[in-house]
Image (cartoon, rainbow, N blue to C red; front, side, top):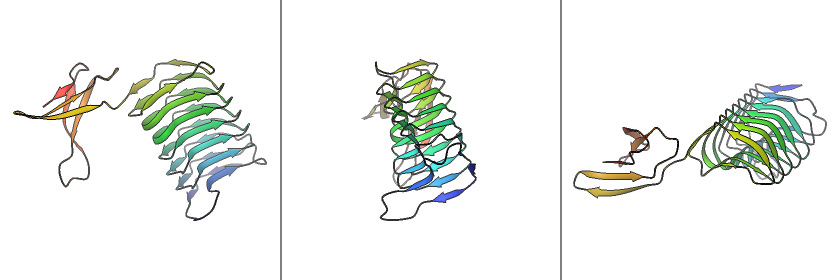
Length: 231
């Protein structure tokens, strides 16, 4: 069974549970693709005590906890090409769960971790994901394993990739650019902006927001990683 091409918006108030799509104990083999899920109170797509199929090409926005959560000795095939925005976690596995891969997802503003494997979880590869802003980009903990973590594009997160000694993963070829810290000062020539050099950067954009404006606009491009100030 494939759950596909549904548009789900969660509006209930005062309930303890709230999932966009839920695969439970009798849902083995079920897949989810091309669904649009908004405002799920807890998880956008939740797999618990089940062996699900592929979870691909879904759009999950504003889940209360996780965009996609594989939990409690569950499994899924490929978790790929999903677009997840906001929430505490993007893709999360916990309690001896596993997937074949977590690849080619776009995860933005996951406040805790974009891709998180916790408590004896496993996946084949975590690769080619685009991860923007939020907390950690990719994190393993408590005896979890990933065959490889590679070719992910990471920008603006407070933490990048964390693999502690009790976990294992081969980490290679990831692009990780964090937001630089900066200072502003008034000078005779104008406002001087200084920032800390970011490893791997080939240049920087300078953006400005004026009084009364709701967004920033780019005013300059600084080429070269060694230049760390602009007036």
